[in-house]
Length: 117
Image (tube, rainbow, N blue to C red; front, side, top):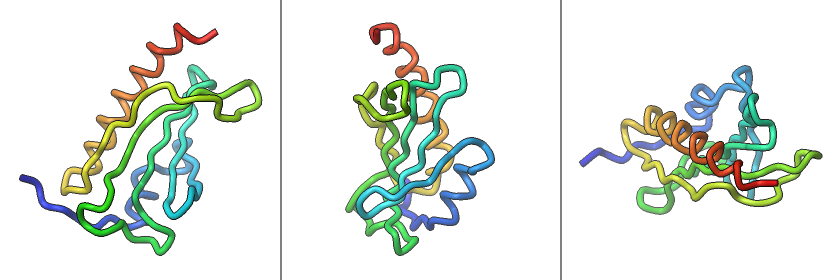
């Protein structure tokens, strides 16, 4: 069983870099990282960080990182969800697990776009 690790805001910023297209926002009590796909700008991948605004992840067992996608309208506003959230536990391998969850979510979102008119 992997061990829980505390994750900081800076560690998230280092992984989901602004220069790579990630945008950091605040939603409620935590930081959310958004990435709009370049090959389909109506799909946004969102990562709910579980890092509160005091720059530290919440206590063990209180919440996990979630990766999911949403559909944007032509003005860039969220219209609905495209995929269910993939849960990423705050363990030692959280970085590689977020990358894997991103690929899975992106693949499912692109597949689900064929149903969108």
